[in-house]
Image (cartoon, rainbow, N blue to C red; front, top):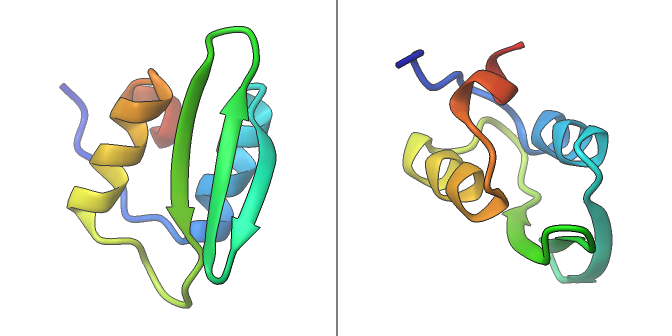
Amino acid sequence: MPKTPVLTARKVEKILKKHGFIVKRQTGSHCTFHQSETHKTTVVPIHSGDLAIGTLKSIIKQAGLTVKDFSK
């Protein structure tokens, strides 16, 4: 299993959009992404700096993607 990369929220946002997710809504500093084909929804905290590893793993799991999709 590949190692989880350290990414910023903006990079995660670009990767999710590349995989068909769209911004459903934004409340404060949290952006909700939704993919209509798989009916998956995930929330990304838009803060400065890198996301915590646990937060990134949770986003990957909720999105139904793999760590490999985020490592490219």
